[in-house]
Length: 611
Image (cartoon, rainbow, N blue to C red):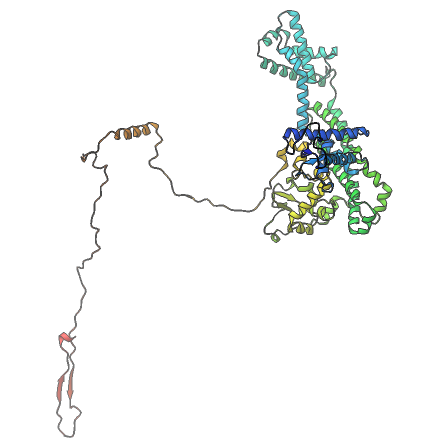
């Protein structure tokens, strides 16, 4: 049940203080139990008002509507203050009016969401519940068998018949009241567990008895199925493969046809809203908000049908648990059928003739066509230094990312007054605050990336005015008090981180860090004890200035030596000597005024010590 968090009720200043919005006196600050009591009284009052007008409304739908009305800013409720009695009366009146509006596509969408949310479960959860019901039905029979203390022959025979009944009930292959089926099951059981073995069976513990009963049921079931295949038995066993072969295609075809119808309606409403967005004068003549609510209605039905369809695809591949699948397919088929009544309101406002007139000159495009138009326009990640963009070739789990707003373009929805256009992941997925957004065009992606918070706030405010958008666009985290029932049972599947791919190289050094060997470490416990005892003994010893031969090497000694000098010696030296060269000058050899020559010899040779 969806429980809205409505503040406590109090009287307005002009009213008597003794009158309250509930039977008990409520303070402005109430305990959780008191607030819950007030909420339940409001829901009960709204339900009674609707019942008085001939409309039976489930409490879950009423609770959802209360929260939707309180969230809508146009209604003037402030959740930060205590509601007065007049506020409660106004809240009840608004909720009753919306719940009784049978021609409102928005109400149909909310009813569809509540119905699907309360009735749809995953295949595993449904089968788990189905098996739990079977176990509860068999518990009484199993208890009678395991608690039996039979001794007489008649008691043992009665106990054996109970074992046969248990085997038939657990297998589900025939009724335990049919005499032919009971005889066949008894013969199969006697072949593996004769009546003479009951004595040994009764000596077992209760847990062992239960395990043996389950094992006997499986063995007998296998024997009967084998006999049926051989044509020697199998009384009361349905041909489950044949039943599923006929039921699965028929149900899948029914879902496909419904899905095709709602998709076609969604495409047509989208085309009309695009036409209205381009022609403001046309929007004055029509009611664009009704068109948007009709679009939300068919889109929600499309999403639910797509959720149901994969179950049938998986169903056709399973041939082991035929009984479980038969029950499951009947439930899903019933669920699909009950979605049809929620699609009637928008047909009253926009019948086929009106739709044909509005579609005049407009090309109705499918979601696939819209994606193909801009499949080549991709975002250049280099244009955004602070934002991360994901692409198919760089992200391993690209198709498994949880896209915000069910994959619809956030920018288009925010700027075109609520138009739903499918986003194109090939353009690029924007990762912003650990959430992922897709866009229908590259320009839309660039515009949204400039100021994401602005567009997110716009979408949040639109969801407050149209409560069906909270589930349609999966905005439950922004409105935590309206988390859908199906999400509370499987929260772990709602978030998947992207696995990006890139080419990298690494190198590991041989010795990255210097060795850190602690020489004083000792792993031997006895060695540690020996050291501890030695230290303990030292506390009682007196230190003397006595040195022995065994201890002199254990004390710290220091000595000083002169460092060696670098010296050199020469044993042989290469040398040389030179005598002066004789230089003698004779003057007067050229003659003079006289005929006789008189020479003068001058010795210019230097002394030996001057060389």
